Length: 152
Image 1 (cartoon, rainbow, N blue to C red):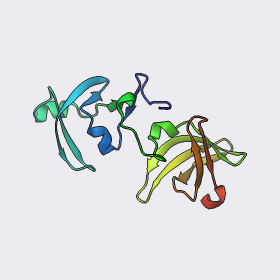
Image 2: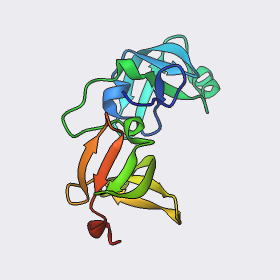
Image 3: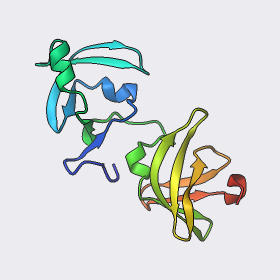
């Protein structure tokens, strides 16, 4: 699955994907926690974890790192990628090196990658849309983009 964020083979949940929160066990600060109940919406989920019932127990978890084991993540459709799979990929326009993916961002209209460029600041944002991305080769850790579409 590429390079997970955590050394323990986990990746962090910052903007929860409903597919990840549907897993029966999550990691809270690295410790497994079984999900007793789910409520709320996909955008604002509410989870009750086994052994953490009540407002005080929930408050004690404030700021805790929520993660899932990469091996537990559900399979994705063709053309879909987990953010951690794209991080560190070399970004090219044909044979021209553009930079390296620093992170993936969720924007109001689409998802984009933030690309650290060796010769320029700030990072370049490339939307993850068909017109901008020619191909993604996770095995080769390489993303081919059309810089003309991006405006450079």
